[in-house]
Image (cartoon, rainbow over all chains, first blue to last red; front, side, top):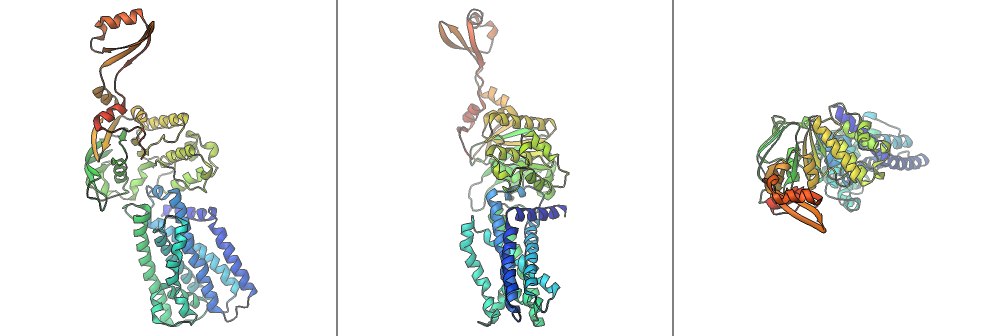
Length: 234
Length: 287
């Protein structure tokens, strides 16, 4: 447990030193100022989508950047010969970027001053969504060697993931969108500042637990096989 | 400390074994050199012992325990010094050591003391992105020591170092042996192996071709001759059989009457022994 707390501490230091925290706060600042200047009355859906698409989905990009930095420095092989397990390493990344996403999301949310706010649901929405995108980021980065390749990969991953926005903004309606976990994320964010059906809430939580677990398992497997290139125990 | 019995390993999708049934034992407090060209199986053997690959056949016992029965606590007992620098560029040298030290169960060594040992104390608070290659290599080396492990694996520990720092690293390795550490050294550098190792193994094509103390190998494969250079109007060189040297009249005459320039036994160098046994040359091989 001590090594898990320590790797989280160092991951936080690393994202600060590599400038990721500064970039995240700068983006959040721009969004917050825009929301403060705009009248967001009755625009809960837009605010929820904004929070989801920015600090949460950036977890995907930031995780990839951090792992590419480590890949470039070849520190993965050094971590692999310490008692730190692969599980702890990956959960530390998930925790670190979720914490960052939570802080940035809260700043944006407070700027929007929503009429309704459910803190617990907001915490669940940020946590589940951020963890999901951190693991998708690890899966994505396992197929590339540098940032340029990752930029090319991003639309391939993000385009299908963004499809539920069509339903969310009532452009195209289909039950198929409920198969994409983004739909569940958007519903949870909406629930945190507005009201959704109870079945939608249950679907969102259950489906995100399943998707997070599946993505985590795949992330562990790909991290071992393609990044660490080892068959070390987890 | 390390016992390997009939070790075999092949990578997935490969038909031939990379390691073809090797046996060796390393005693506690011993420095064991693993010498061989690229693709010989050195790194694979080290990866097996450090548990970075599994799926091997044979027996691997570490500190009296089957490797397959160790959990991640195993890494509290071993330290690995990599061949190439691998540090967090935005962290200082000291921060890099602190990060990795925090992942072990054992109380970390005096980190500044370790940096001092390799001449990095003054650069302790400098980001490693500003380190030279030699400084990064020295940081690599001391990082393996932060948790005071019982077994150490060093891969080309003097590569990229100037003679003064290479000498310092070799002295530290000798000190570690004095402290009772068991050291597994992988190198192409025959001079380092000759100086540091209690025993060496020559590995090529996944097989250990010879294993003994460097001195024993050199004597076994060298010639029992003494080469004498002396001045007699011009420089002359002559060889004598070491057997009954004291009764050799010509030798006695030369050392009494001529100005001796040099005298050397013709024992083989470790490099020559390697070539003789394996038919391959280690010089200038890059892995």
